[in-house]
Amino acid sequence: MSGRDLLGYAGQWPDLRWPNGARLAVSVVVNFEEGAEQQVGDGDPRSERMGEVLSVVPDGVRDRGQEGIFGYGMRAGLWRMLDALDDAAIPATFFCCGRAVERVPELARTVARRGHEMAVHGWRWRPHADYADPATEAADLDRCVAVIRDATGEVPTGFFCRGGESPWTRGLLRERGFLYTSNGLDDDLPYYDRDGGAPLLVLPYAFDSNDMKFFHPNGFVRAREMVDYVADALAVLEAEAARGRPRLLNIGFHLRICGRPGRFAAFRDVLRILADRGDAVWVARRDSIARAFLVAQPPGG
Image (cartoon, rainbow, N blue to C red):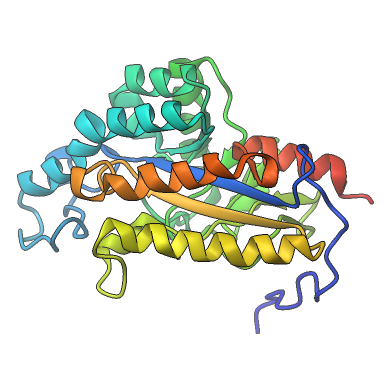
């Protein structure tokens, strides 16, 4: 049986306030991955199936439709979403695939110049669980870090991959001095992974308050549905924070999903809700949240 930790904080959360005095932090994540997905036109054996519709193009045949669905995110969606972040004065974290940054470094540079964090999302948009050996995964991690650094002048310190990590992902992150990993979907507060060496901070992420659910049959259809869902989550966590329980809310978006006009209102209106909260919540980049937690709850404390 695996050594899964199902205990966590066991109802005994630390007495923690975020830097602005709030007990609830909020992380807005935008995925920067278009151009890093599987595409036969890029030399892959098959193209990514999941999009506005499930691809019906056979394996081994170039799927120009899927290429266009992904391409819209970079060509059009990015600008709409960057302007909305500016209008709301919300700092975000961009989960960046290395190949996507390599293809459009000028776009990555624009994102960083507007004050957003650039975190590693793998070289390709793929699960790290499917790496067959640590050396290949390490090489792809290093390539991703290098291309983000070269494009933006910043060295990324955060990590999140599609699907799950490999057995050695966290060891590779430790060796490279990463500040945090976000491949944890199991808590409302950061925590330390103490297995396998030095403590590694896990900054949990979430798939429920995520616009990817527009692409799932049990998910959102209208933009308002996501706004209402996030508002409900915010209300629950705010009530818990008022009782002295520190919390973190994660909200995820994709350029090709909420960058579309029919879904953009979900992104815009969620940002407006957060901006209207003022100092009642702390909306911050994930690296800022990680550093604040390290100071408030050091791993040796």
